Image (cartoon, rainbow, N blue to C red; front, side, top):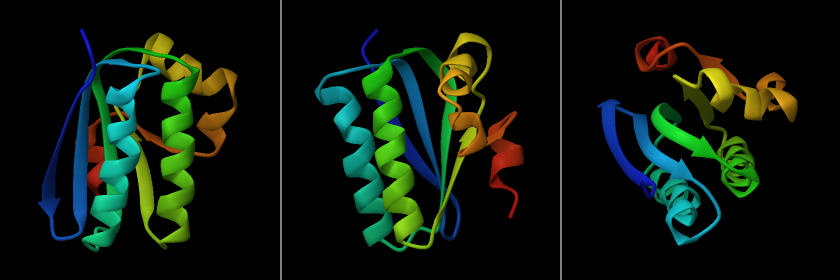
Length: 113
């Protein structure tokens, strides 16, 4: 399954970006960075990535989140990761990104201000 992406503003300034499928090299995952740009331009301050439906991530996919993290931080906003478990979380752990990104067990916990 190719990557699918959607987003929903939960409360003013807080957006959940829901991902599903494989977050891998290719034009589909480029949507992550361009969506982050759009959300920041629209004044969103907390961006939560929901990994509940992600089945696989490769190094390019991880790179999209590194790029997004830098853009979000530069804008004075906050990036949060929700629902990354098992091998998906391990991909971030092996690269020590679990010490950089904020991980939450689920979207509800990640959306708390």
